[in-house]
Length: 328
Ligand SMILES: [Zn+2]
Image 1 (spheres, rainbow, N blue to C red):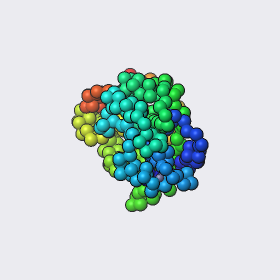
Image 2 (image 1 turned 180 degrees about the vertical axis):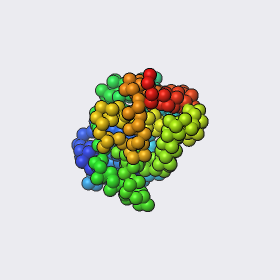
Image 3 (image 1 turned 90 degrees about the horizontal axis):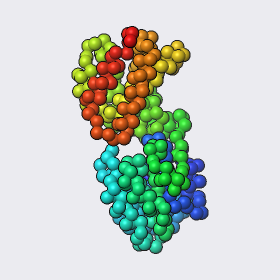
Image 4 (image 1 turned 90 degrees about the vertical axis):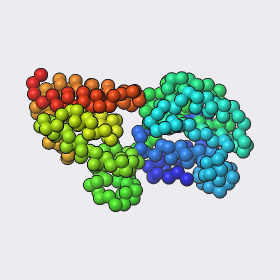
């Protein structure tokens, strides 16, 4: 069964304790806080034939079938490959599932994650199922970026924001999830994951601290003109593009903040503090704003899964970054 996260306890009571369920829920919040696990627990509960104390029993026919992955009345719709769109054909298959009668005589439950992976055609195909609820069916839509969804999709769901854990809760949970890590490492991971503990674990597994060290080293060499944008862009080919854009976006924010406040407490993670401070002192604010606008626009394209030439994009980023210090 999916893990129950302590920071979801009150939301769970509220959702699971309902006597009547919405036809569709939109569970939204940042990535890496356990929305999928929450949706899976709710799915199990809604399908369970003998729920006890707001939990699926784990033993009835429905729970057994769900565990075996062969429940006839549940449907999970997600991209066929990670980070790819959900195709309109996949949604059409789902739509034909929606009109069927539940085989175990209870509810049918559909989980879609992430909803924003549907393009406009796929989303429109889904709308019909949202507009004409069929029998005892509950749709659980999971979204990391609800702002990207069609308003017509959102308006047909009961929207439910999923909470982020507090700092102490995150740290405690992460300490048990990564028993071999030390506290400094966990704090750094949490910071890199913007406070999302599950994302912190995922980032740790992909070697994010090593990647970060490589990028920070590269940026320093770039500014000392010891490495070219092309060399760096090619050397970073295993680092997720979104992560790179997040970091540069973060650094541009920190530079601007320091230019405004001169507050040394607000210079971010220790690995880049000196560089951020140096760039804040040497770069005209207009240039920093310009590069930040550009980074934000490119980041949107990366999020939108646009077909981008990764090396060219990074070269462009690094070439402008190298030009930051100095007069216009
Ligand atoms: Zn059960």
